[in-house]
Image (cartoon, rainbow, N blue to C red):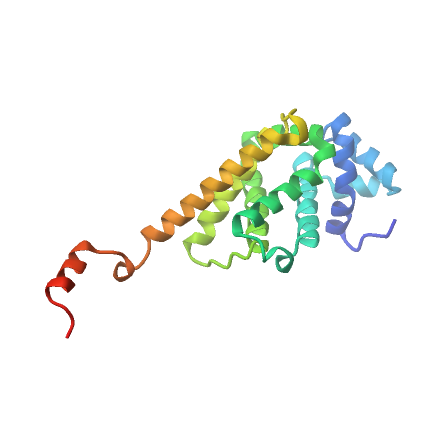
Length: 217
């Protein structure tokens, strides 16, 4: 295999194999050793790269999915889709990318749910949501930037929780759950946009009656 340029590259390169091994060994040193052997990497170098423990392994795995998503679905490729379809496509790509690693996901979610890991879990969810919104074409810089990412991050986390236990054919239950949540996002964004429209752009019965009574000259 190609020699990684730095520790971050090494982590990203090894993370998928660690996820494969984590289904049996958990997110542990044993998984790192197994992954290193599988890809022909020095096990001591691999252990050094992941000396931060399970969360460091999970973070590298998620970053790898982020990178794969960005490579497979660049913004210009999905720009012709409606915004809800862009989000659905991006989330579905992520689910498909780890479809063969559900047990690793189950174990990862349990680790991420531990109180001491909450800050890193939130940061990881934010980063993935930000990557999705950017690919979807979002350019908001005001508070919408934050609300969109918080909302999508929570929906993605909930979707993963459904997905990991989904035994329906072709994960139909997860897809239906995701569709409902995305529809909720769209309704919320539409309502928010209407609520925050400038007052002079909003319909005013009083203003209309005033114009009828005193028409412009």
